[in-house]
Amino acid sequence: MHKGKVLVVGAGIAGLSTAWGLVRRGFEVEVFDQGPIPNPQATSHDEHRITRHAYGEMHRYARLMPDCFRLYEQLWADIGACHLTPLPSIVLEREPTPWIGASILDLEAMGIPWREVPVSEIAALYPMINTGGLTRAVEFGGAGVLFPIRILTDLVVHLAGQGVVFHALTKVEVVDPEAGTVAVAGGTVFAGDQVVVAAGAWADRLVPEIRGRAVPSRQAVLFLAPPTDLAAAWAAAPIFLDLGLESGTYTLPPRPGTRLKVGDHTFTRAGDADGDRMATDADVARLLSAADLAFTGFDRYTILERKACFYTVTEDEGFVVGPVGAKASVISACSGHGFKLAPLIGDLVAEGIATGVAYRH
Image 1 (cartoon, one colour):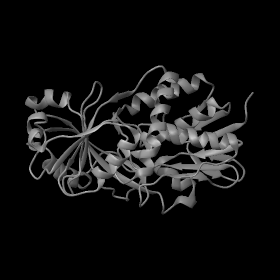
Image 2: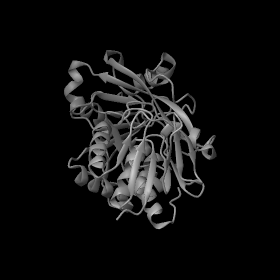
Image 3: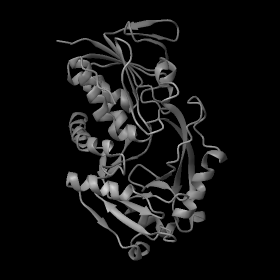
Image 4: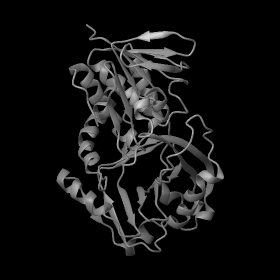
């Protein structure tokens, strides 16, 4: 017996995870997206993303991760495939930062291993790393690579098999949080018992209450082919996080079906979510400079793609999750944290709808 109908706006990882949590609790669910499903324009449509327990001074996120990893296991069981490859993360420090020390406190509390890697050994272990200015290197366990396109695709197939109704190429133009309705382009109105807005960088257009707080941010990444002599090293490489003020990058090694990816964690907090996803020279200027400092001989790498995507970002990198009006909720993730934590956040929102005690973050 169904407990009611919930309309989910957005078929990215936040919307699909919420639909997954709702279906498991006996709700009818309809999912709307302005593009195809999965949508290549969505923030969460990507080859691979980092997941981890180490979160520096963001202790609240770190405390959520054990439950999130348990939800991953349930997700893999439901969709019939595991789309997580465990990998250690190597954190490279070039200027003093509290990030490593704060992460160690959390990992030790969770019983997750970590170890110092002597800086003198980095060049031999990881010949792609520029050791100039390197002051510390630490290997953290409890990390890995998620494969978003595979996860999104398998979730859509699974949810359709559970009776979820998908409305692809259906742009929601108005959400009425008091009535529990959504109006789509062309004027058709759909009614539910609850609405969940998980529209990524477009969320503030439908939920004015978060405007100015969760701000769309245009971010750039590079997909690369390494030099031939480093291809084997990259194929066996861990995740790298570079904490240099000028060299700050995050790097995911190539894995089957993915390319080497380097990203910049500096948020622009600017841009139009409807903009082109082809990164401009301005988009990648800082990233190219940072990568040149992080890696030896970066001019020998071939740029395969320069891509721009959009996140929503608050000043403190927090989620904006909670009720809006009597019959609606909003999920606005921050940065790449959104993909890491989506199964848990979606499940908590679904539980809040089921119990009537809304989840807030």
